[in-house]
Length: 184
Image 1 (cartoon, rainbow, N blue to C red):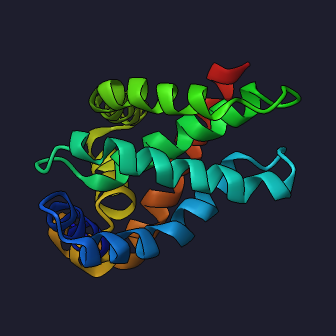
Image 2 (cartoon, one colour):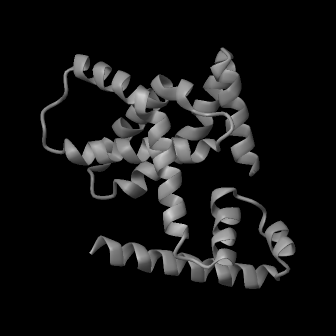
């Protein structure tokens, strides 16, 4: 588990136990990352909507934080919420503003399904990784999902760091090709 993952998970555990300072630290730590995800996933949305989406994501995290399972990584859970909020923004593009009552109702409904969404995100990632050979899939998991140190991963897999980088690059290219074929 990466240092970031451990930090965020620890802060969320403390926040769920009532520590307001840890909750504030968590939100402060994840906000720039979520902004980056929103910018990347919402490239074709007007940039002035990006911050609104980030705020929606933070509200959803607040409403759903009790659904995060402490034995699961927090990143996929956060990214699933972000992905769905960006998709919601695309859906309502050009639609009149939603009344606050509807937003509150929708957030309540979403709270019940957050655990399912987190599991679906993990299954989606595993499905994508299934197109790779076992070694390449483990390299992607270690470096990109668990954010382990490249030197440590290379040593554990009996490879040089250069070979590890080449393998990662090839695996990511293969995943991108798979994604493009499945989108068309």
